[in-house]
Length: 139
Image (cartoon, rainbow, N blue to C red):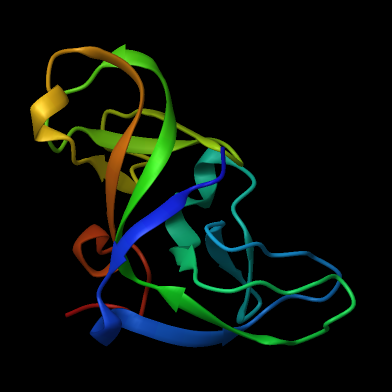
């Protein structure tokens, strides 16, 4: 399951250009690469994580501008575990997030009603500003 966007802050949306020859779909977790966005592809991409795609770009649409949510809540697939409210989460695959001890966090578990229960999906809060990892993107 791709990320399903449940809410985003309309004041926290930026428009960035997509990289050449990389398809982007609605709900993709994105990173910056040479001043353009491309889907996150590794746990260590947290350092350049820029948000969630609010649009799509085909591989043939070189440099297409795409809106990116810097702050949003999404429903996501999670590795099976018991999460606590606001536990850090890291990228695990193009469709899955996993528990994190903070080093590679890109989002936080946001299902307070499911706290302590073993789950395989849930709400995730993404807030690039609060992460404070991306140079030039802060409060």
